[in-house]
Image (cartoon, rainbow, N blue to C red; front, side, top):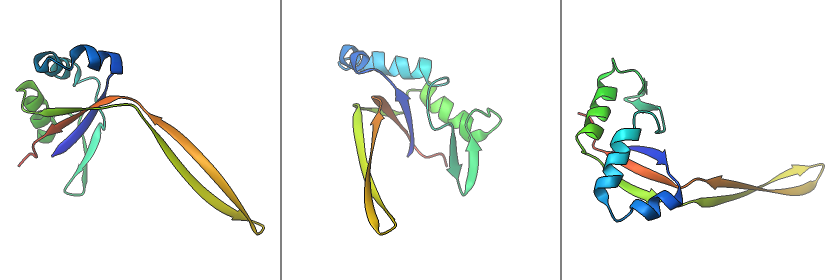
Amino acid sequence: MYIFFMDVSPRWWINHRSSNEKITKYVMDKFGRDYYPRTIFQSRKEVDLDDMDNSLSRYIRSEIGNCEFSFEFLPEEEIHKSHYTIRNGNVIFENNLRKQNARLKISIKVYN
């Protein structure tokens, strides 16, 4: 499966979650401009998905255009990471907090 993400607001999701047609239409309309990652690896080769001369790029766009994808809403989340360093015999703990926006996870079948 190829996995892509599109940022959406939680309010948008609440308003549209009961209508698969509205969500599908949104993905079809906005996918070309607003998705990530823009580059992926296929057989150890980096593929730029903005390059429409590439057959994989055309395949992904056609699958989106034909509604051949699935989606899942991923809510906002906070990612806590902590690590430590040792300096001059002292242990220093450092916490990192990163916030991940709410997003749609778009799954597309693998191109053969």
